Image (cartoon, rainbow, N blue to C red; front, side, top):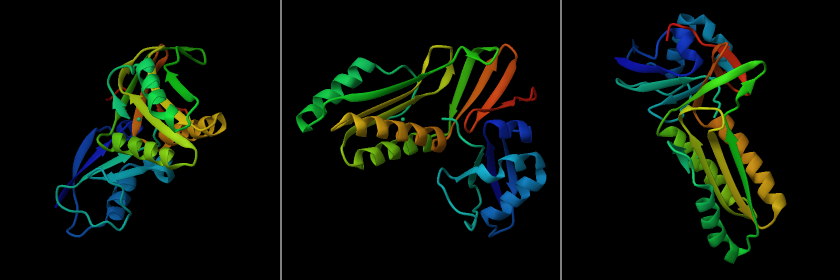
Length: 229
């Protein structure tokens, strides 16, 4: 039987491919496919401990029995609300809506984080930052984080949005809004939600600079992009 393996971010450079069809024995487990992957692409070992694996958009363990036609997505550490958005968020509209819905429930403030594209990294000038999301899992994961935040004691509302596409210096990339019964809770949960988005949501970025193109993986690790893709 055959399964489709899709590669994201720096793994596209490692494999030289965006996707490929792989023949596996009937009843083969996901762990066997991963063994084949690391044997076929030894340079991928650098991502082995942090590799994110989804089958048909769901997380499964290594014992999962593959089926004909399954889609297996292999991703390096993510760099990523709500949900994924294609255009800027209207901050005033979001804040006003949050205030109207939380003031009667005891809310007194909204913590807002807005991330935007840096124009300079070290001595290099950033020209474009390209964000790609693995959908619909990315939006689903962002909404999961929003629901987690809303269930925390003292939180009245939480909204997260992440931009995708080609963004230029100064363009907004990530929005986090948290309203709570006091500022201590609001600031803490906003920070925790932000970290979860950056480490759990499958959003990947390619930094195009005047000194070359770089995949950004995990906590800011930069890997030169191969010219093959």
